[in-house]
Each structure stands twice: as C-alpha cells, then as structure tokens.
Image (cartoon, rainbow, N blue to C red; front, side, top):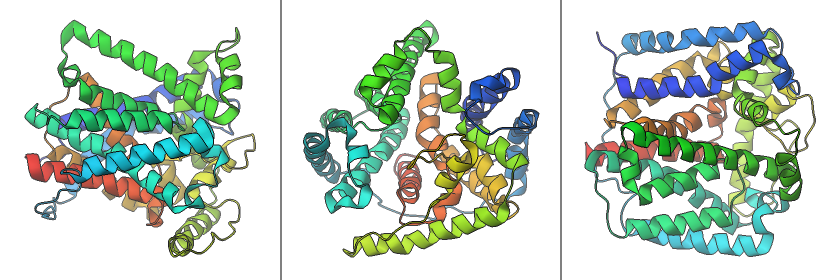
Length: 392
C-alpha cells in the first residue's frame, strides 16, 4: 500500500494547517486576550489539530483509489471565450464602480439585486479559478500565449474597480505573478523578494478587510494610530476557523446546527425563484452555516456578518454525519496531487490559497447547489481537472 497524496500536495496542506490552525493555536494559548472579542473556552483542546496530518495520511492509505471520471476535450478555461468573459467582466466592473464606487458590496442589494450583478459575481469566481488553470499550465509547460497578458491586465483592472474583499488582493497578486512568470521559479536568496511582496500584500489585505467593515476613512485613522497592533490584528484575522473549531469542541448543539443546514439547503429553491424572475423571499436569522457560526463565536452583533467555520469546525458541528467530509478532503487532495507540479515556496503559498483554503473553508454549505460557494468549489475542481487532463 502507498499514499496517493503526493509529497508536494501534502507539504502544501501542512502549510495551510500551519497558517490557519497551528499558528493561531500557539498564539492564543499563550495570550488569550488576542481573541477577547470571541467566545472561546478550553483553548488547550486546540492542540488536537496537530494530530490531523497523520490521520489524513492513514485515511489516504485505507481509502481505495477510484478511477477518475474521464472528461475529454474540456475547454472551459481556455479558448476565445476567456477573452470575451474578460471584456464583459471589465465592462460590468466599470458599470458598478460608477454606480457604487468601491463600496458597492455594502450599498447594493446583494447578488440577487439584478441579473448583471449575478453575471459579475459568476465572472469574478470564474477568474479566481482561471488563475489555478493557468498556474498549473505554467508550472508544467513554462510557456504562455501572447494574448494571455492582455487578459491578465483586463482582469486586474476589473478586480481593482470591484475591490470589496480582502482576498481579492490575493487574486490581483496571483495575476501579477502570471504577468511575470519568472517570479514563480525564483530560488535561493531571490525568494526574499517574494517574502517582501507577501508582507506588503498582507498589509494591503488587512487594510482592505478593515475598510470594508468600517469604511476607508475610519480604517485609515485606525491603521495609522499609535495604538494599532498589526500582530494582534493578523492573528485575529487568520484565527476565525480555528476559533470555530475550539467553540464547537466545548459548545455543541447538533440539533440547531442540522436545522440551519437544512434551512440553507431549502434556500436552493429560493435561489431558483430568483433565477426565474421572482423576488427573493424573506430569510430568518440565522440563514446559513456561516451566519450561525458568526453568531455563535462572536461577542459582538453585526446584522449581516458571517464567519466560515473552516473544515475542522464543520466536522465537529455536524458530527458524526460529517465524517463524510474526511473522504471529501482525501479526494480533493488526491485530485490536486494528480496535477503533478513542482512548486517552490511562491507556488506552494499561492496554490494553497487558491485551492486548499477555499475548498475546505465551509464544506457543509455545499448542500446548497445554487450558492456562490458551491459554484466556486465546482469551478476550482473543474480548473484542476481540466489542467490535469490537458497538460499531464
């Protein structure tokens, strides 16, 4: 018997655990005041997470390898359609920037406010996943097509015009690296340039995340104040999934959790009504797993906020039914392994944030096949599969 998850993929997975679980556990164990705005107890239980890498390896040995579904001539992320999508994305980005400026996420009525916004949201997810396809292609062929650079520039401009979440800064950075592919193959001391880039990007991501919650003027005053602690803010920002895991280890209401999961599934039909031209129905609060998780772990109320429970929080929330998520994780890691790309620290970090982080962010919410999250995960898996089929 042997493991089907490759060493490179497993290293990338360890990086994901290190950033979002190991680091938070160490910091909050020695200084719980960092997360004083969250409802957390029994912090020492979080060390359980250190056992999980070996559990995944054991499951990979025990779960039989299934034959991949053969899909020939798939081209969802290649061809002339990509340029057409990019131009539509740019036009819609300009339209919504003029209409709402950078705060359209908060001033608009959400994804269902009009069909153009639905298209914009889909294209935004599509181009988040196009990076994955191009990333794998680059690492396998080390070549690029002439018109790709134009597409990348268009997408970067569109993302800047519709900048409404901290993670968008990451996607902009990803396309920047695709414009200058040699950055992916830096070695030795040249990696220092990348670490500097990551530091600047991290500061930008944190600033954008704060600004989207309190406004850019307030964020500017806060970030540049003498009392601002960047180290504490960073730990708070990356700790929510680990905090969720800690919370459900000590405060578990399975009946309520399943009730909200069923409710989120029923909203699938509400989304169908929207697509058919009907008005969106009224939602009871909490309306999703993310919303429930925020209300559970946060000491402060926010009318619209949600918080992803992460993979481990999701497993505990719905235990024991959620044991199936362990098979989901093994299958996804195996699919990533089949892409067979050799990654340096630059590639490993970006690949982790573009694939492993989002597919394990809120796996319980995959029960709603018409949600943005379901579509996002489906596009990620499609990009991985298509790149594997065409370039291996």
